[in-house]
Amino acid sequence: MHPKRVFIFTLIICALFAACSEAPKPAGPKFAGRVLFLSGDPANGANLVELTAGTAAGTYNLSTITGGMIEAVASPDQSHLLYATKDDVRMRDLRSGNEKSLVKGNSFCLAWATDGNHFSYKQKSGATTKLFAADMEGRAKLVLDDPNGATSCAIWIAPERLVFDRFVGATTEKNKEQLKPNTTTVATITDPVKLKDTPKKWSVEAVCAKNNNGLLRSDQGRLLIAKNIDHFESLDPSPGPCSECRFVGFAAQSCVPFLVEQPTSTTTELFSLNPTSWQKQRPTSITWTFSANARMLIKSSARLMVSGDGPDKLLLIDTETGEVTSFFSKSQPAAVSLESPVPIVWIEN
Image 1 (spheres, rainbow, N blue to C red):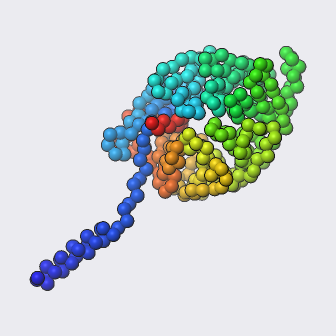
Image 2 (image 1 turned 90 degrees about the horizontal axis):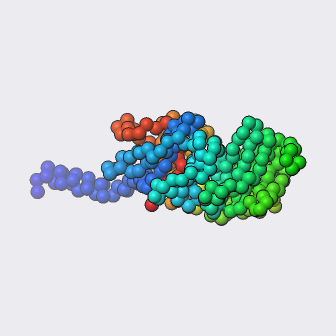
Image 3 (image 1 turned 180 degrees about the vertical axis):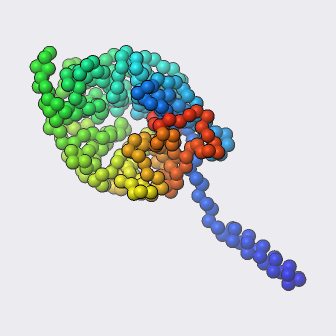
């Protein structure tokens, strides 16, 4: 064979061998399912918007479902959406799209019971705030009549128990109940409702509906861990993995909590905790610094995270590699305008 041909043949063989020996590049994050989020100013009534994957790779579809939402929260099993408008509290079936009005009046602090069979809300009249618990038909029960309007939003710790903090002491005119200042109250939704005050040592930050694992925040700001928050009065929580971690959410349909450390100027450390041992795992450095208002959802596989951050940013994040992808870029602008997107629920099927 001619020497020149031998040289060319050798180059081709080497190129092929090098191409075959290269490690395959990891595929980027791939979105699937439906994400519902609020877009716009809730004070003026935000829109409920649905995001789905487009037919072409890396493209996405947006559609507005309804508007006028002040706040919204999905049920623990992701089957229903509870939301407040200026006129009422409504419930939307996320499978059929059917809606019904449950509570009349301007309401806020919506929260689901851990079994998804009850919810709580607050209403205000002048300085007075009332906390209610209601069933799925909207039949309500008064939990607390607070003349000062100085209680936190309630968090459910069991199917019939919820917790809230009281900040100001007072005496009600109706039953002369002594409202102690700086206390945490456990309310049991029985007939009548039972209230149990305890000195405030910590506040409940999050509860996993599947097994009542809980994250607390001490008065000094430290993150604490409780394996079963239902026994609130006798809790002895353990210290969390870092003093100023920020909880960002449980992986959907699980009790795997995800947290972020205080960011540097360019990166943020994201990690999860083993829900059994509570040991730190899967640390990832993300080349993005999240604002304090960023709201996040984590897929049940714990591989992907959706985050709304800033006036128009909706991000897809690989929790293993730290890769960050904007859902919409200049090459593929959103068909529906985005305004301070707040992810509410990730429906995976």
